Length: 170
Image (cartoon, rainbow, N blue to C red; front, top):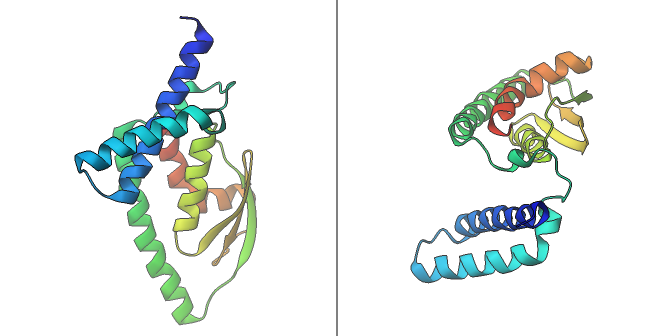
């Protein structure tokens, strides 16, 4: 089996796994019929669309398979940061001290999936919304803009997320 065929089969397999995970999240059922339908449809859709999910010339092939132990830590940190940020936003609103602003910074993450996870994590955290992600540049609206300096803003907004995401998706 040549290298290109193996890579295409790997792309189909990874796309099927991700689609099946989405199926499980949406149906929230582990009935045998549901699992069988989810597996069949996930595989069928993966055969048709695997080129859209994982590019053929993707260099970081390992970047699509997360390190599970770091992923669990990341989810726990994300939920904790969401709670902390919600109380911080509430406190700032009650005091009437909000300073909205838009900041632009670069991320050091190399894989696309890690960048999207970072952008979504920023948006899930109250007080920040990712407006644009373009390659390794992020533009974020920040409810409590303490600085406009890009490197310092990057540390305040995305520092913990970025450090963990580097370990989740190598």
